[in-house]
Amino acid sequence: MSINKEKYTQLQQELNSKATLVAVSKTKPAADIQTLYDLGQRDFGENYVQELVDKEVALPKDIHWHFIGHLQSNKVKYIAPFVHLIHGVDSFSLLKEINKEAAKNNRVIDCLLQVHIAKEETKFGLDATELSAVMKEKDGLKNIHVVGLMGMASFSDDLSLVREEFKTLKHLYDQYPDFSVLSMGMSGDYTIAVEEGSTMVRIGSLLFGERNYPVK
Image 1 (tube, rainbow, N blue to C red):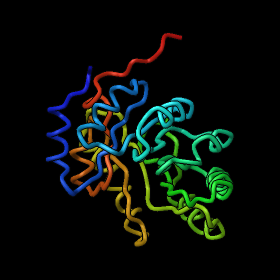
Image 2: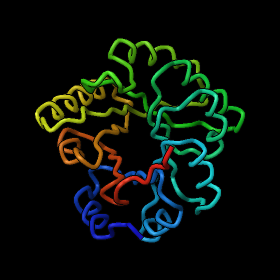
Image 3: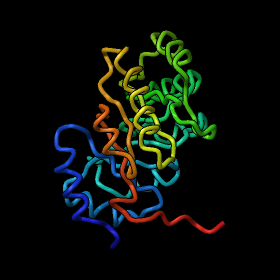
Image 4: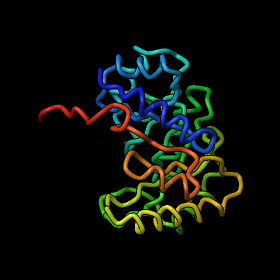
């Protein structure tokens, strides 16, 4: 079992009431998730739809499942019946699809809009202008609830750069007083993210160890 129980306890004490801990369990077996669940963890994040669907069936029903990967519109239907929060909504068309599938399941699904704050071009997300446009367009969608923003900082040893990127996201977040969730910060930069106002951090390797990616 690769769960770092000491780190989990430390994180809970460190975050306290400042930020919600989402344990990122992608590629990890259900047994590892169950171990953290038994320690009291209820929020878990997954990046792959099929993996999330399989784990939802196998694990306790009071888990809050977070989808934190890049979500394709044609996969929304598989997670719409149960997903707790979708982190990476980066287009109005995806928001519409989530709304449609939520309505089919008689649900209102909470969503975060993903903002591009990193210097890397590979990261997904909206810019400030696109964010404003989506916020105006979403008013007709009755089965989604945009509760906040999500962003990923540059993968960089330059901590001042990382801090500035988080500050940028917090500044945008503060422009929408109805928001309640600011999801920023991962295993390598969560302390800076919390200092800059994050209310939710996504921690994987510190809890579960390194990723076990299948060999292609």
